[in-house]
Length: 68
View: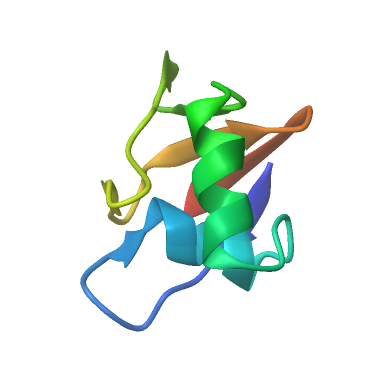
């Protein structure tokens, strides 16, 4: 599991995908999410504006991340 430290209260799912270099642009992140390729806390997430907070678990491309 890869720990991802954030300095703010939350980060949106779209921002997270760009921050982790999984996607290059917001448009790419939106399409990636709409294709059902991302799970947040075990459930497929279809909203790129989903707020990720500390201890949320994100699964994408066979990798697991946790917000710290």
